Image 1 (cartoon, rainbow, N blue to C red):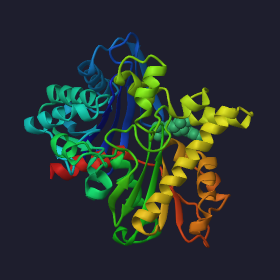
Image 2 (cartoon, protein in one colour):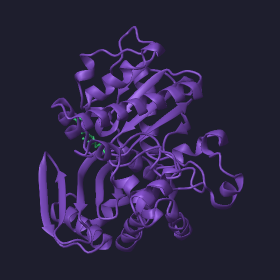
Image 3 (tube, rainbow, N blue to C red):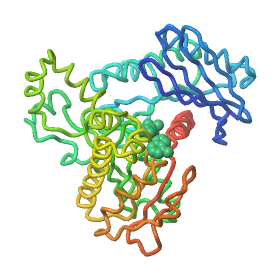
Length: 397
Ligand code: AMP
């Protein structure tokens, strides 16, 4: 048995899961929050529901990784560091370089750093996580799993913008998409649950979390996705605007005295979406309950969220000339029966119908469509971490 850690590093956080591989048993999982701030919080759950948490100052990702490794030893989750044979890092931007997950050698690390411009909020935090593990456990297999890799199968007509061609040729200005690990995982699980070969299926996967994206998966390959050059594009998200007309940027900058374009982009990323429309919260649970209590802006935020998802599904039915299955996943997709019900209610023309009783269930994998439905509808909890651990195993050979 080998032990593999899946890491998802953010600018001030580091999420992890430790797996026994190839059994895919989760031995521990946890989170370091507020890295670089006072009173960082470290939590880990392990064993049969045991929990361990502490608050202390963690200055940087190096210290967070050291603390994580020390704690695994202290809690006897690993007896010796040599039991850990691999680490997989989620990396947001793989650009056109990484069409698959990759072993991280010096060249790959340089390439990952060179893509920082494509994901300014994430990439350097991920690089910090990679470097911290390289320093502390230099001999283990280190793998990068890219959010964008799954989408590198998109055809040119889907990933090119209608901007001058030279911008793509000179700077790589194109759609890259994100959440690829999740779209890949749930589309393959859907095929397995339906007892079909994925090569025969047209699937639309709806990853609806705090960030959200919709992907058209034809024959197991991503052929289009709603996120763009960065994760700002597409559907309405927790705090991100999704698609909007770029001409609004100079217009609103002038009206609102916004000094720089970056400041505006920050508003579009952090103060828009469900939060911006509802004025209540970026969290769907709060938006749903405020709407239920008659808050009109919360209701509007919810309605816009649903409407955008329906429009993307419609686009992707057209893009693939059909659809066999629609999959819901991530925090909202897995848990909000209202979202699944309301999205599908608008697709009856496609012959889509769900069973309202099965739709109430959550926490596991369910086929929620009725027997009569022409399109299968599934609720599948995503599992990006296990995909990361599998890729570490695969590339370790
Ligand atoms: P994620 O980014 O995948 O963790 O998803 C976070 C989102 O899932 C937040 O908007 C949560 O409000 C939402 N979510 C989690 N549980 C529920 C629930 N029971 N009903 C509605 N939304 C939920």
